[in-house]
Image 1 (cartoon, rainbow, N blue to C red):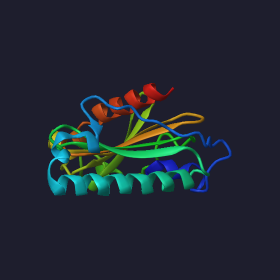
Image 2: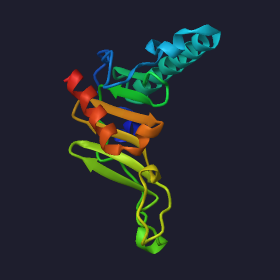
Image 3: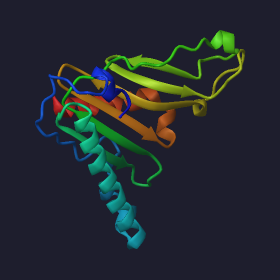
Image 4: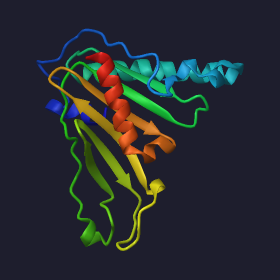
Length: 185
């Protein structure tokens, strides 16, 4: 589960809290996947909702297990058009922050930015994938892709993994992490 399992080699922590986790009914313009109107019509919508709910349930169990039995939840959220989606992962355990990203020297590679880098937005650490932009050229908005943003404390970690155009806006994804964080503390 991204940086969440790193905190002690994936074996969990003695600081893990088994108390369950509840997520907000809305995160900015995002609602739980099963609440999106487009998912409420037809057999394919119902099948999609069932599949995503099953995957979220299984992912929640895995996240808890990888953190020593800590309370955990994974839930898919989407905007009303299903154009942007976020996976929200919350576990009652600490994680590495900032997230680890292997060092790559953009100058040696002849690029504006390293292919992968970590960017900090206050207390939120984001892993960014950059499309190769040759040195001397300006990167475009669409050349930046947020892989995940994470905030962690002594007993709580919130991570968001975006898909869609929102992934091109790491600051916005970091703001969503803080919104979830604030709803839980």
